[in-house]
Image 1 (cartoon, rainbow, N blue to C red):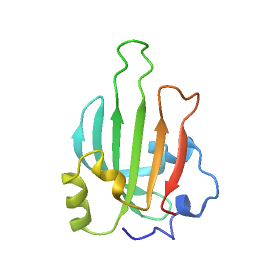
Image 2: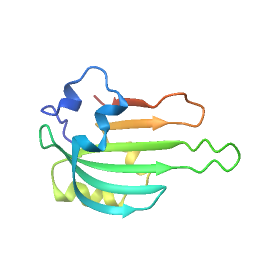
Image 3: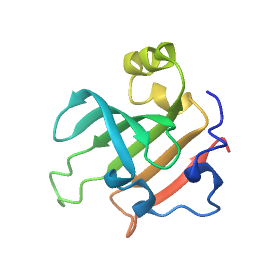
Image 4: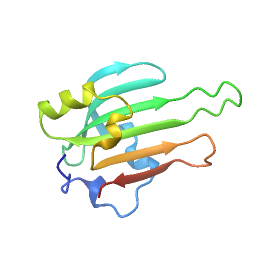
Length: 117
């Protein structure tokens, strides 16, 4: 995947969870929509960069502290989008650059970072 060098998210030295708030993006298309799993195509309102976004939540039946993971992969072409749509949640982790917004069950705060920057 191509580096989104024009995007404000790429240019920021330190990202915080609010940078990925839904109000910063336009929803272009929804591919999956479940309470614990969703996939969407988003567009950054600032620069127009498109992102394939996946949200995945594991249910913690014992402690109720459900880990949540969000992956944002910059995309340019419909072919890239189709490849990502066919990829499993674990296969998505091979694509770089990507933004990871992780909140594991043992964390106190969400962690937002670029992988492959």
